[in-house]
Image 1 (cartoon, rainbow, N blue to C red):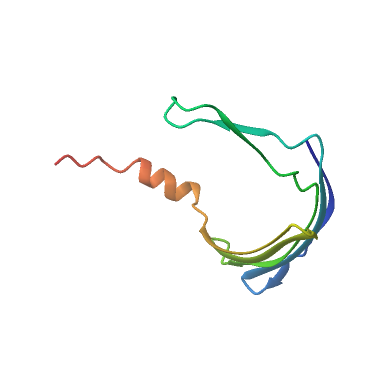
Image 2 (image 1 turned 90 degrees about the horizontal axis):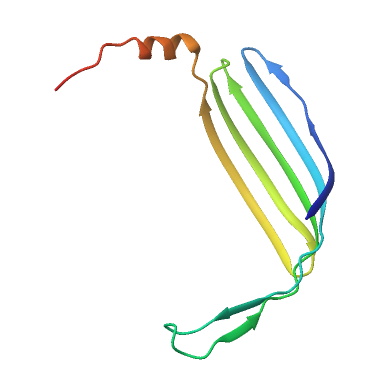
Length: 120
């Protein structure tokens, strides 16, 4: 079970036919009820069973993120985000996400659906 408290802020900035959306987020997460557990196994089903205990889980994290989305002519968009997970001595994670997208219109999809089928 997880709890998360935080904030996300974004602003749409019109630049001609394009839209720029800078974004920032900050979240604190706490994990409840997850304790160390035994991992049991054996070799080929014939050896004696052995166990290994998992580590005590990391309970608190601070998630931060900053990024920007650019929308071109209301059809194309691209985003670049940097996210980091910190606040715990046992784990630090940093990620960079890059994406590109294309919005399809209903007219284009209707035209594709009405095209005759080709038989080879």
